Length: 113
Length: 111
Image (cartoon, rainbow over the protein chains, first blue to last red):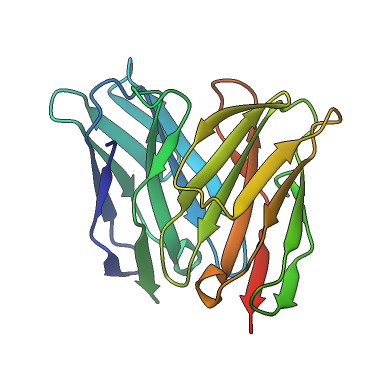
């Protein structure tokens, strides 16, 4: 079945450094890839998304890249701040599973001040 | 604020009982999704409704059921509860083809 693998499961960086989280999806027909940030006690919040007709998208300190051939996509956070500390989830949808969204297992990001 | 409202925020009950979780989607969103998140785990997709009709199903147990009403709010019913059903249950909503917007969840504790 469809699967999304996410790495690393935990990431610790110093404030001001960059953080990169990588995901691999199995369904080559997937065409929409959102990223969510989940803070303690809250629901996941969409932070950026990319569609399969685009290779890269940026929004201030956050960027996402997509390699359709390799079925990889990555989240890049530059100039990290303590408030970036949270759990980040990647997801893939629109493939042969139709409207199902498959989430990665999550990455717990710690930004040390 | 995502615009998705889930009630109740917390629910404590016993094994064997039945509970109903409620979700009000964002204004204009026709799709509603339900997810289960166990402690330190990822999001497990349960089921999706679109404008009152079931559209996609994930690993939803037979003891669980859901429905979406004409006013587009949705309810997730969990019956014959077991200790392992303790989790956060999230609802999300979206326009068709758009990103999902999540509520803040219902924390279900089974004693």
